[in-house]
Length: 280
Image (cartoon, rainbow, N blue to C red; front, side, top):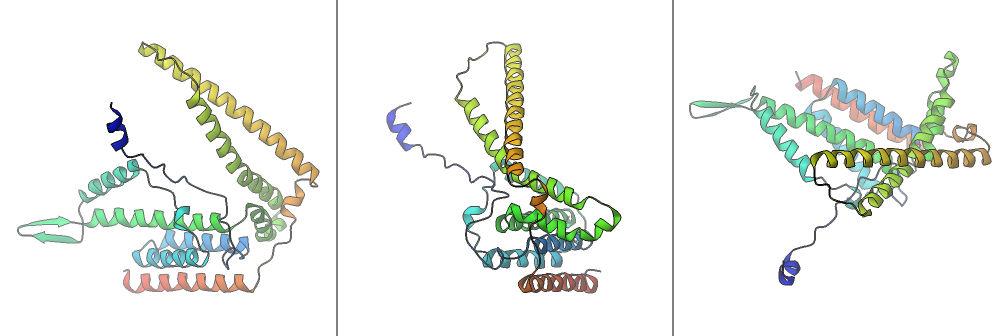
């Protein structure tokens, strides 16, 4: 390969990674909402889309998510890059769904083409995108430390049934806090593995053996890193007063939270009314 060929080849831009459980910097009305309000909205919309997964419900929820993203000043850079294999998978799914036919049918001369399967696939895809966007909005506008007190407050009525709500909230908070750290650690391990000099095995059996040994090394290293992180987190929790302090922070809704809940309830009621009137 000549130097001129190397200069003409464009550099491949790295894709934007998926950023979860890390709020977008800045402040807005959505950022200031109580974490319990966001959880209630997500739960209510999930129930709505479970029983009424029509185009009207999906459209109204999508409009609500886009409006919240605009208010929260979520940049386009926060959206992850869609890999090429996912586009290919979606295209393959759309083609196979279109082969199923069904109503409505478009007549082209003497033949008819059923679009029922394709429309059903598009609706399921749009529903998945809306739910992912709803979860991403909560992740981008909520601090992880606020989720455990909100869960403890929302689950307070369950304490009459002697359900360990506080313990569940602590476990949830620790899992949410540990997930980003472990993802970073695994990315560092994967990058270090790629930098290691490797000998190219000559036989297929040697290649399988090498992959098996590397997989065992990665698993062992990942377990070691996870245990080290757990030990450090345990020491930090002990210094700060124990695990009970995680869910003991004051957490209450405010006037803006009631307004957000009212808007979400109005969207759900409107979606149900339209679906019952015109959805059939």
